[in-house]
Image 1 (cartoon, rainbow, N blue to C red):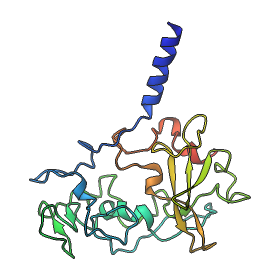
Image 2: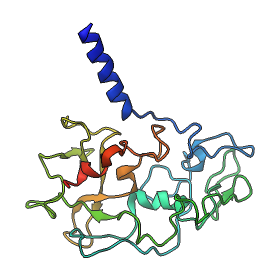
Image 3: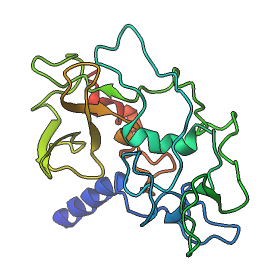
Length: 245
């Protein structure tokens, strides 16, 4: 009986951070108005936007200039908006309709200026909604910022470092970094870990290094919680994966 109770408690604990790979019926499910393909609003198998470092991206790049977060407490280098964050902002900066895609379903071919699937819906550009970030990112968590626990010695000692949560491996011949979220780090990169994105540090070393991006904390394909967080933030649990405060 005791063993059964332990197993049940373990299952409940694991389920608190469990995530599935479904966006059906989440806020990222943009179907409707005669469009029933969920994936098409972000991805396309053909004629994708190769300028954005997200697989088979089906949206136009934003042409706006972003103001990025900076402060005298940041020790890491800060790069221009890019990587996976550039993909997120094609919706979340509010500069273009969320239903405009490069390659619409069917055989009509890709349109250079994009094709609205529902007539040009603009339901993310409401300044009163928290998911409308705008182009001024100075009051949001920094993106494109060098991870503070990287380096020897670390850039900032108040971050998790190698051997203290920060993990690294070569995947497909490229260096990759992430932060394990398990109570006992397992050294395996999983969707519930906080992913650091490899970018060439043009502001510093000129070599690939780990950077914090939107996708570090958010998994757009997760239905575990409405904020798409990789880990539930109870007691600031997301923050303390990186920060040793």
